Length: 189
Image (cartoon, rainbow, N blue to C red):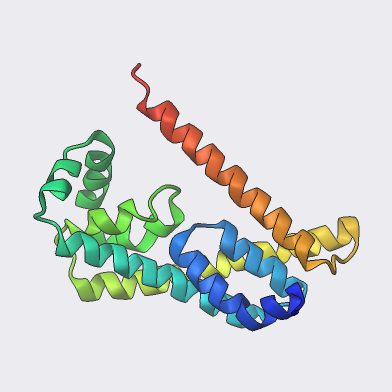
């Protein structure tokens, strides 16, 4: 049976790619920590993060464009949260395309809202490619710095299981906070 270190070394970049397609900031931070521990190669981790993020952006934009006239999408456009995002997009779709990845809660809503705008597909692809690359570098570097801080405070962690458990706890905590925030926003005032 393979050790967890061998599994991370063999499949880690694919896991990072898929994780960034499905989830937000905790995956690139974890990739940075794993790169600090020499289980992933830092430049390769940044590339996997950027590609996963960009592919997700393109996928959700494509879904939004493909189904923009569908009944569900037209109904969703009239909800309060989407109206706010569409208003932001309307003020400057190019600017919004360049920065939405850095705005919490916009990872899926951003591309879907931009798909409803007049932004060209080529402009969207180019802006989000640059934005995803910068986002990947920022968050993977933050994870690498976190790995450095952890090593200074607690000594080098050679237990990959511990690193992945801490990353899982951070992900679960973020998910719980997001769910609580969404529930609080939906409660009538």
